[in-house]
Image (cartoon, rainbow, N blue to C red; front, side, top):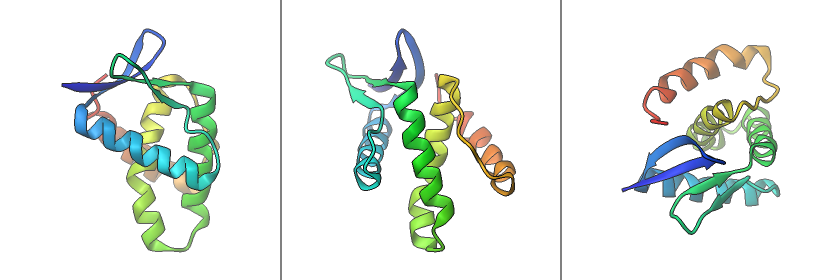
Length: 119
């Protein structure tokens, strides 16, 4: 069983059921913490609709939290959620502003994770 993340008729990530549900729950919690909408909506068909524009705002705010905090625990907790979100955002065609000093490490992390995220 899977939990696909879709934008219109396009599957962005055909997540496993548990990994998809966990990602959605983490994103929803982070969005609530950041006081923004996540841009992710569960559907009656058992998938998750991605609103690219709203999701982009969420990912930008998540990145800003990640890079502004000197707290290593907070950064560690946010890293996996951020990288997964960046892969999904790339698949929507969206982009966020990333500081030059972060770009190479995030691109490497995204590339490694994207290979495991079936679409």
